[in-house]
Amino acid sequence: MLTFRRNGGLLDALDCSPWGAATGRSRRAAPRPLYTPEERVRRDHSPWTIVQGVLAPLQFAVFLVSLGLVSWFLMTGEGLAAATWSVVAKTLVLYAIMVTGSIWEKEVFGRWLFAPAFFWEDVFSMLVLALHTAYLYVVLAGIGDGRAQMMLALAAYAAYVFNAAQFLLKLRAARRDDGRWSGAHGAAPGAA
Image (cartoon, rainbow, N blue to C red; front, side, top):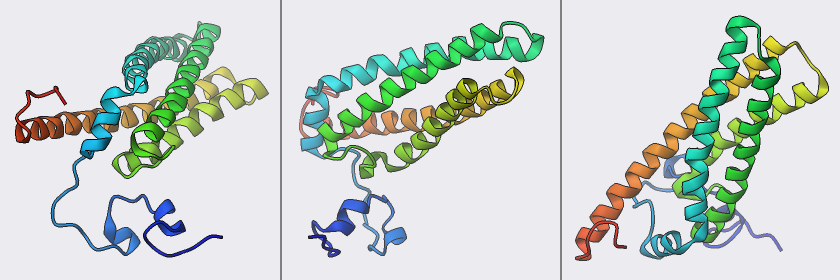
């Protein structure tokens, strides 16, 4: 039976917004650290943390190569096949990082997606995923010419860059929190 009450009901399951005012909750005086001590331990011991650490720079490298090929096609009209395959490769790596990231989020936070610590990053990731998937659709369906398809790829890439910046800022915040936590517990930073 679905319950709509707080403290374990449907509302708590759906309410992931980090801002209390958006959902009627009162604001907290002190900002919540990115990870609780238990989440930090799960993060540090999860094999999916390493997978994410490998896939993120791989995806960025594939993105840079693809961006070059897409730009070359848009400037010269040459190399459509190479540019297309590079966007397909970037999209496949994106799918891999999204699936493994969801597994990581479930293991660390207990939610497949939209954990409060990564709520807005996940929201924007859905847009990135939608744009990349739309690109695959228009290519497979033969919609538009190569130039129009590559413009859609550039829109997907712009969203990806914004999303990557969100995650980099979150990584920076996590390192700052880890330093505070380690200092408060008498351990060297990064030893948690």
